[in-house]
Image (cartoon, rainbow, N blue to C red):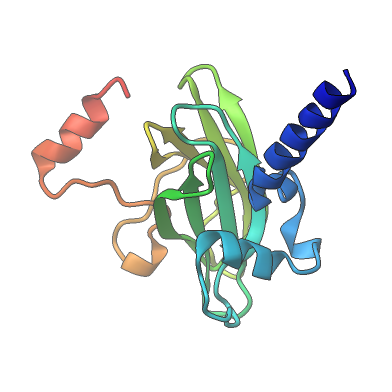
Length: 197
């Protein structure tokens, strides 16, 4: 019996040692965590030093949709006018291996304030929700919703400060918000819009 207990303890210790570093970061406000930048760097394999205005670790969330296990959000809020906020999102599997990654603008003259993750029954997927606010002639964008589906990230809704749907700005590239879909023709964009996914 003592041998069995000792073996179980060794197995448990080995399994604990294999828990990815990401598990220790899940649910924490990373900008407040000492050493979070280095810990996220180690997991993502990013060796560069962050520069002012570049996205820094904000959150690690866990999900159970498909092979995807972790969502890592890096954010850079507006720090000068004129300027923009930006984000970088990584999808990782259970072993901490990157499945996919995107970098995108959160908005020109728009401040990135908070971020959360929630489940949408209507879309049957998790949503990353970015809370934002316009600054000095910025577009009135209060929330941005990004759906996680089939290891892809898609901007699915923009809301103004009153919670009403509003449209993206496509005239100037630096005003455009979110991830650009993988489509190069009108037919491909139409197909994406008509898709049930």
